[in-house]
Each structure stands twice: as structure tokens, then as C-alpha cells.
Length: 113
Length: 110
Image (tube, rainbow over all chains, first blue to last red; front, side, top):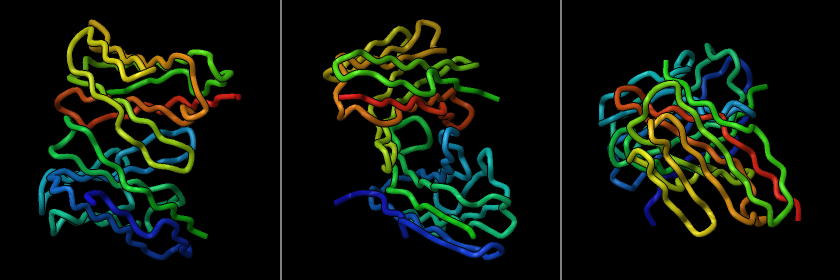
């Protein structure tokens, strides 16, 4: 089945450690996105990528990094510089950037203690 | 920058009552999308509106795009418990990333 997969579903890390969240899609989509969701805040854009080897900062990129070495994969690293990393992280993809339906993964709930 | 405001933040209805959520953009939009997120789940695309004044229906759901392409609404007729979740609008203005509203959380009391 085609889809977008995030792993793991739940992740716990100690403060000061970097952590990488996985996002893989087999929909052959060019565009991929990372969003952060906090209660009552909606979806806030962290990074987005229009094509392989290209990515752009979103509204809240500080403390995060990404790579897009393959079309299928768009991993997100939450670094120790992110002041408040505990959140629900959603990866999404679409055929082209912005103007078409976005397909979301199941999300990763990161808790930093 | 572009802002998308969505109201109300919460709505509690009795099963069978109607429900409406409204979305307003600070700028003219090229298109607007609507998503539904069930509790504990991820957003799922419902629809995209592109034309000024456009109205689209999906069973009990009616979506409207304003004439000025700066506002939109989602109306659910005769809510059911399966309608529970958070409804998000997301606006695209053509030269900036898609901007999501903060969502309206719908609770349906049986």
C-alpha cells in the first residue's frame, strides 16, 4: 500500500541529546514537510522540501535540521538547541509543493525529560 | 506575514445539531484546504477550494469559499459521533507556504 510512514510512534530522550525522526513515503511525491503540533497551536511548519537535495526553513526551524538525500526520505533531527522539543511531530508529502492535497504520516510523539 | 484565523476554538454539540467552523485569512488566497484530525490521529485531507464563491458538498459536509477568497467555512448538518475531531483549514496565497489555522475541536454528545 502507498503511504507515508513515520517512526517511531513514541520517543523518549534525555535533555541535551539529539534525536532523529524518520519519515518515508512511497507515493512518489516531490514535496515533503515537517510540522510540529502543540495543544491549541495547530500545525506549525518546521522545514519543507520541494525536491531532492533542496529544503527550506519554515516558521519554527530553529533547533531543527533536515536532509533530503532521497526522494522517499526526509528525516528530521531535533537538536539540543531546541529549547522546548516535547511535542507531536507530523511529516507530510504532496505531489507538488503546497497547492495539492497533503498526506500525513501517523506522527511521532517526542518527550524529552 | 499571512495569518489564518479559525473560530471557534471549541464547539460542543448534541448529536443531531448542526456545526459550523469559520476560517479567515489576512490575505487573498489562491486556494484553501480543509483537514480533519481524529483524537490521537493525524490530519486527513477533506477538500480543496479554488474558485471564488465555490461551494462543495460531501454528504453532510458543506464547504464554502468566500467571494473575496479571504474566508471559508465548513458546515456539518446533523452531527454524528463519528464527526468528533479537530477541523483545520489551511490557506495558500501563492507565494508563501501553506498556513494552517489553529483548528476547531468538535465534541458531539450522544
